Image (tube, rainbow over all chains, first blue to last red):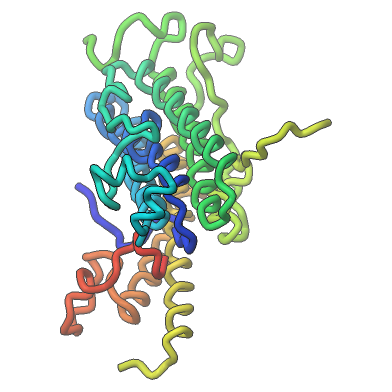
Length: 198
Length: 57
Length: 94
């Protein structure tokens, strides 16, 4: 069950359009390490999670990621608002525009559509939490890469916020893994899979 | 937090072939909420900004 | 209907919404912290304080400007502002 709050988690107010940078930032919507993949990954993994606190981490971070792709979409939307056909052609936004006009569609910067193969739900606590920690680092690197390209403070500000969240989430998934370890036998963490074996 | 004492004795706390992130023990918050919001975390300990250049010394 | 000047009203509205976002951000951070530190009394107390503050601010905002959540709506209004007012991605009051 979810409830919508009619506000963004962090404000997005962009005055200057920039379709070129929008095409880069859209990767954090539908790209391999984007917020949509993050959200779907954590929310998918939680059902078979044998520890309540770890299922809580997955639920609550997965929920926050929904608010993050809303922010990314707001950034892309505001960067491409009211573009003229000339601006679309000059900026190279025409290849996206021909299929989606100025609407939002989850894809990577290179045009590859969002795909569930970008994440796993493996059904093994250690494996899934290790993937989640890696996912947060991959998203953090993507934000670092974006920050090198973007100069507009209206855009940098929310991107920096999103980047900082990746580090906090990494810490929480790391702690979730510690909880899993405390429930397993430290002499052999891999003796059985608590999501499957009795 | 006292209920979460690790079951393993200290010397055996970190067996090989496993990843460990240290527990956040300090829940000190930024006094200034504007600063916390702008930083993207309420915990000064977790503030690790991107600089995009090597810091000397 | 309102007597205040529009730009001033807008600034106040924006300020209140930002205040809600800041308080809610503290809640989100404490929420995640508590998930992995479920016996931290201090963090739990703080969560309670900020939660009460958020509820109060959202109530104030709803009365003055319009709804943010469907659980708190102004039943005296003759308009379903949830749908008629701008959505957050427009960048208006966020």
